[in-house]
Length: 289
Ligand SMILES: Cc1cc2nc3c(=O)[nH]c(=O)nc-3n(C[C@H](O)[C@H](O)[C@H](O)COP(=O)(O)OP(=O)(O)OC[C@H]3O[C@@H](n4cnc5c(N)ncnc54)[C@H](O)[C@@H]3O)c2cc1C
Image 1 (cartoon, rainbow, N blue to C red):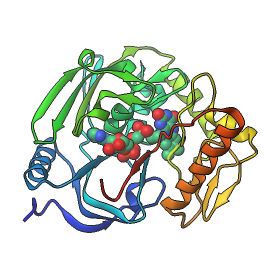
Image 2 (image 1 turned 135 degrees about the vertical axis):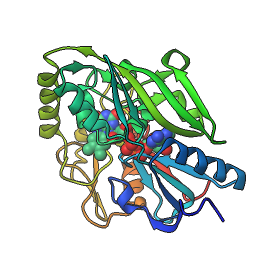
Image 3 (image 1 turned 30 degrees about the horizontal axis):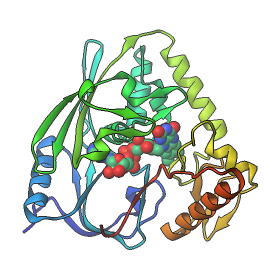
């Protein structure tokens, strides 16, 4: 049998995405340690089973039919300070890491306090806000590859750009990341300022996956969508947020197909009016490959 008792069968993915959308995963496991991640990936590899590692599901749109494979939900959440360096599990809350480090008087991750993902998801996406990105303070990553083997990477062996990392080309799990932070008494002030700005400009009380589109070169996706008068446009329970036009929110029982229909509509109108081909930032998770 497949890696029992780790895996459960036919688990709804709704609670594992901040959109609250998705069918069932054929197999599902919550992973608490690096060893569990190694065992799970090794087993899945030997069985030839498709898998996806997820963090907090804050940048994922699961399919309405679910996922015909195994979802590995990363909850590896250790945290250790070593002088000005911090070593943290890939499943640790990125927002909490941002708050904790700023509170302790260290700068470099203040922006993280408003990003409701995991550390692994933030590294994978090179999450960022304002002029800050996850890669800036990152020094190294521990990765478990699809065969279950541990690989260690220094930052110089990795590549990062706007919402991209070289992990998007690899199959496996980010199980630990290390960051180097400078002492700075103004860190807490900056963290609070960034958070205040976010509270005023984003629909944080609603179910969403943050910004749906990457900003096109030289412009801002939300501004283009707003200029088209698309705020409040709804398909089913999926609505373009009246607060921030680059957010699509789930007002109740929205389906993935409703979100996708709004995405297609926005892409078409932005292309016709402004000539930009908007790229989706949210990761679409198909039922089958
Ligand atoms: C209200 C709100 C505000 C947001 N604001 C921002 C923002 O300001 N800036 C920003 O960049 N993003 C923002 N986001 C999007 C999201 O929080 C980030 O992209 C975050 O980094 C995703 O982390 P996650 O753990 O939720 O990843 P998930 O959504 O679970 O996964 C995203 C991708 O990362 C992969 N992945 C996740 N964990 C791992 C791992 N351990 N190993 C390998 N692959 C992994 C998944 O397979 C998937 O492809 C926001 C989202 C919301 C809901």
